[in-house]
Image 1: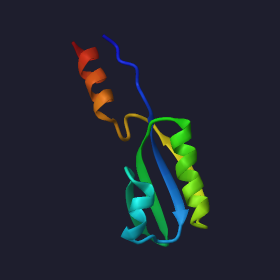
Image 2: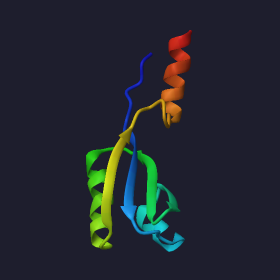
Image 3: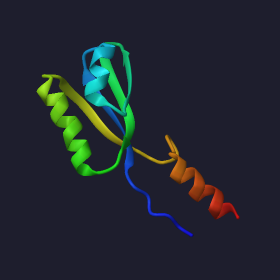
Image 4: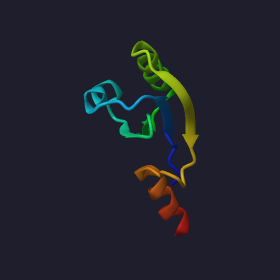
Length: 89
């Protein structure tokens, strides 16, 4: 049985190294700071959630450097792993 995939994994990069206190603003996203930027990674289920995160970036006055949808093979979620296992049977 093929399951319908919901959401994609994204990488969002903003200028500035954000402290952990900002993690609440980006709940559900992994946050990594290095070299003057912060990288947010995580599963975004739909466009409204993506726009909500981007509004938060804007509301905090952060400079958005990039937004990238990641291919499943870079950061597969549990659903994708199940699909791969089922297709191998």
